[in-house]
Length: 618
Image (cartoon, rainbow, N blue to C red; front, side, top):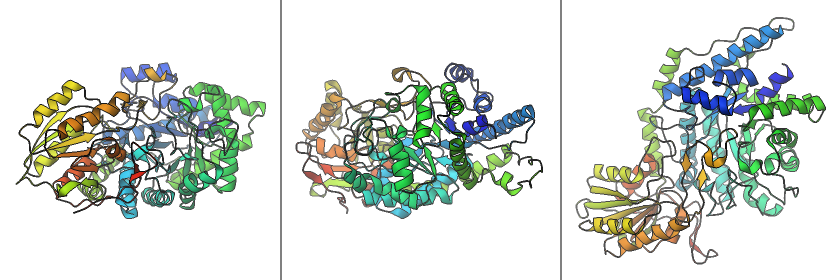
């Protein structure tokens, strides 16, 4: 392999378009503007890419069959590009398939939507208390990704969410107990790997205790070294013991681990000193997206890629200007700042992951003896075989039924005054469903109030909806109060009453300014939201009707709203979790979930209102 081939193996990039060679004209324009290429095939050929990551905002994930065909096209493009480079160089360089990856944590982060199976997210699984459910969820998710040609999932999240106001982790974490999180991380690694999917524990050294979002700023974690060992390290130790394929870094400053002020992604003391030497990890270290503000506040884009490799990283995820980053690494080797031996170490780690997920089987099974020519690799699967695999695996009735079964174990009943729940359509048939309708994580589910009403109607109720948003104004509240007249109960979907920032999707594209990035936005409540969602609950409670609240994201909402007759947490607003909550409300299933995080009093956060493990049933 040439140096350029080796460096290319370390880069993982996004690219716009639903096909590898014939994207929509608008996607071609965006690729040319941001990446300097027309399509995925050109991107792979130019940079000899080791990996491609899919995003919904890049129009990679429209339908299961389209995703599988895109994956097939990318692998064909890799073969074509390698063949052309080999002929030009008159050398026998093996064709290396691309490691295609995605952020498919499920729950609040899902790039691939229905009709693929959508499963409960991390905190919901934590609430279930079942490692078996977590393992099975990962196995199902992995099997479906495998059928789509995806071989790596940037999951599970190994952060311990100890800050209720954390704007970037929250329900993406399995909980606030380090040992419990460690158990679920292990279970999910086992599940994904059983399906042939490489895993990524993130975000090292731990992103669970911050009120800042590394997508938009550089957070500081003020744990002491002893606190880090106690709270943040256990899930990563467990992941390493379970054989995790990669560890993703965090763009956070942890002075107790490295006083330089560098983010962990660029920190040699953290990545090499702690992760490699102390924890004994020799797998792939992947950066989080290098387009995020948290890693770009101190150094320029030309330095970030080089410093990440010097710190100990192996995969460079989504640098905003790939030409700048790629050339900077090549130049660093030429000048001696990086050695080619150091590049070789990372390439070998990446190739080991590709081998573990079967991407190198054709090459390894027919490896030539010394002096013999490199064999022609086995062709990528045909469209017919790909289509058959998709139909047999993705969104099957068995997978969808399993998702419902897992979700039934997650809904948590926090308050049930005078045994209001379960409701019966015989005694309280008319239900008004109001509240927040945040955008679907995958763009294929919801809106939540409609899903809840539909689920209740399928169970014999007469439910009607009135969406009031995350920041209902006085007029919306008055309208909700009026609509409550003649109803037997009101169900209010609350959304992140306690979080006060606005964040955008998990990675910003190329070198666009954050405010202009053409990505899906994930709304988080503003200061006005903190007041108006509780005001809606209070106004409805004043009608005298029974009021039930369902926290459809963070379970902490119950501490920031007026007392209600019943309160539940679903930990996400996707259909599978909302339907499960409806079944609990109707008594079709008993509530089984237990809080995996403590809920603290709003007026005195030093006091716990509901401890870890709290959950009522009937």
